[in-house]
Length: 440
Image (cartoon, rainbow, N blue to C red; front, side):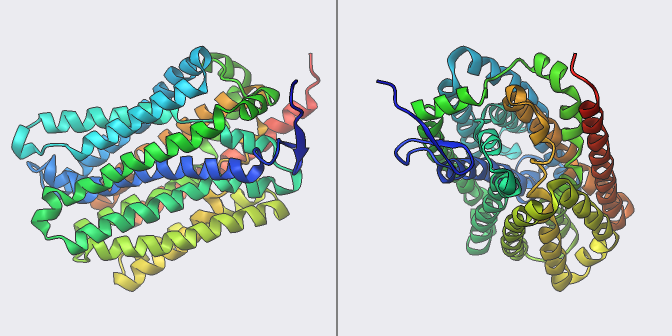
């Protein structure tokens, strides 16, 4: 006899307490934290490890730029990974898709932990790092499990901002853990030990976290209750070409709406570490601790964004945050160049603004997708947003700052804020046009 699903909390089905918003939220946070931990482990290593290990033939600045070029490969590969794994999803289901994607992600990440240096194998070290990074990017395209879309579709109207911020908490949590690990090894190991074996441990930890995340997410998405939820909400993988034909406008706007958030994201995470490491005498471990503390403020701001967005609206909050980011761009470079106190002020203020903006960056436009295309549309939009907003950000910001001074990084941040404001304006016009156009 078929079991009956009842609904709770604004329409979210539940059976004997096994399916509820809190469980979905936990699954989303676990998944996003594992992905962002991988992201930050590689990003930190791109500053403090790879220039010396893989690009030892270059000076520190050029070595870091080369590392950031490798860093960007994952964002280029990610949309291709989405296309590949959406096909696997259609053919074999989410179980096979997530398993293959997370095994590939864990294997690629763990392989970096065994990477030989340039002094040992020459240029092969560069190619192996690039190959592993591409593997990470392709795998990340397959880790989209649809839980964030499921959460958004079932969010009560008065709490949509709250539910939209939940996936974004993974960024702050991932940064805290990654920064803490590297700070510990840099501080307590000799330089020789750190560059010999200490830096490798965070990559092995990333592999372990991916295994835990795999089982936690599979436990949810492959159960009959969740399969029924996905089917009831029409969250099926569509062909990307079909999705772009149906929702191309929303995808385009959604890819550019969060640019202010992503520009600031790198201005307070990857880029400042590279600047401090290359152009100051500050200990990188100390700056990583500052990042950890600032990320706590960022996590609190992400939570606050959910409360504020439910009162004033997500688009209003995103627009106001973009204006705040534009204002921050005017004095941020001076803070970063003002010693430890200035660095701490830069990081804390930046993370608070980032939390308010980033907390809602995935919700304002994603909610415009029709249910039939939200699963694939959200995945493609996320891929393109990270590619345009984050993939080359550390490289561009470091090139501009090294050539023209830190003020140039402020101009880069300002450009992201302008793009967000323009995209939000276009999104409002797009929706107004579609509301006023009668259906055929």
